[in-house]
Length: 282
Image (cartoon, rainbow, N blue to C red; front, top):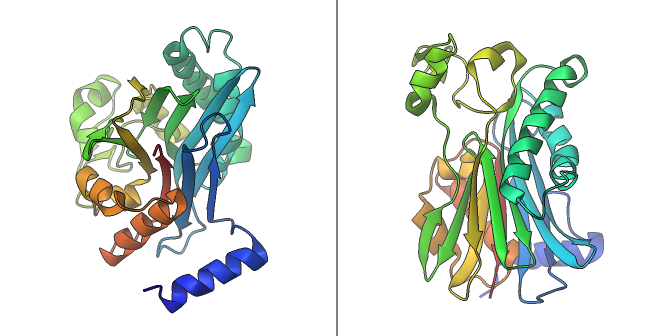
């Protein structure tokens, strides 16, 4: 039975169109490949610091699905800058089509350098990122810095494609750069007692002790692939990869799936900004 809130939301969408915090789209190459996204602001008093990219783009004879979550910390300017520029830098790499993994690595580095050079305009703080490029609905290139995460589901089994860059797991690298990892103040390991991720864009004051080198992985999209989830840590703090996959396995509409995940995270008392992108393959 459809609830009153769902009926109201559907009516509102018909009148106003897709709201800024929710949207959907589909591939022109393969009509059954669709995407949807949904964002919810957390309980903190600062402006929303999560930004999303979710679109299909035609490039000559190829189609690219461009999907990303950018989760800012002490900044909404930097994730907004990433939303505008990171994919542009990746696709401008001359060897993107021949070696997308190397192209993504270089573009991440170039983008971080630009952010640091523009620190006066973009301000302090930084951003995590997880990006996924779907090439002709057949090949997936996933990259990330920080703890925003990408998960793929095949035959009902969730598999994490990104790496959570936690200070405790990169302590040796951080200390080798002259930094330190401490649980004080607070209750989680932080770089120099400040930042709870070991890799990020920006963070000029901590950059000597941080990395912006992304983890990059290639994945083949086959007949067993059901969907991909990209989300900020506002979701993953309260849901496991398999929890998230199980929660949307029977929801056909990608935007409804993304919205359901954010609502489930809120029901589990997540207080952070929550952003989610779902790409469905069947």
